[in-house]
Length: 257
Image (cartoon, rainbow, N blue to C red; front, top):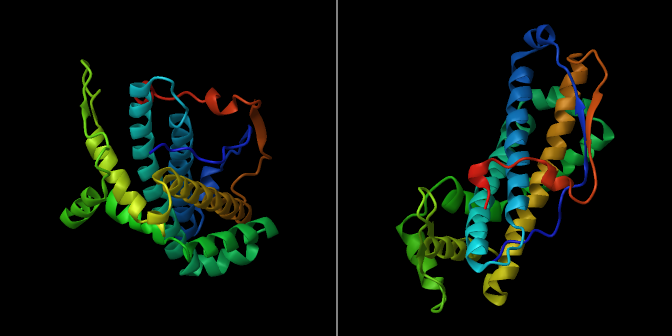
């Protein structure tokens, strides 16, 4: 059940925006909390999105590819959980709060468009929520395990692969079982291949995480401007371009194949 996202990030230009600590100290408490909260959400989403893309590179060796796909599946579940939690944070801290009433009117047109995409996605989070609740931040319960086991193809690989070094084992039977449970949450999954169903899951979370990140950038820009948190203009500090730009970010050794 390979994971292959249909979209990748664009080349990057990196800007430094220095923040004034004194100005941050004088902010309203709700705005200050949201500044740090949404920065935290975006950090997780950005990291997990990139790790997912790194992990789905095609491998010629079957065993290396199997380890890579299992790792990508774990990262995918974490990204789904972080994205779902991020949407809930926007719902609570922006859409249903006094903060939203004070700051949403000051969004740029681009920010207002990003907010509309977030609102539309909030009405379509059944797949994210289902996977998050059962397989991302919570372990599956007995009935979910039984149901996923009943869906396992009779010829699926139910093996354990173990290396000589520590922490180098792969419990492929569990990877396949959890993948079956996730796929079952895709609408009409019985009428499509497992590969197509998994692509739907990957594309859904990548699109929703990008939309969420776009809005977070815009609401943080609004906070910065409303409270003059950055008196200096942004300064470009790096340019990462070309077809290999995604690979210019170092991946921690423990996450490499």
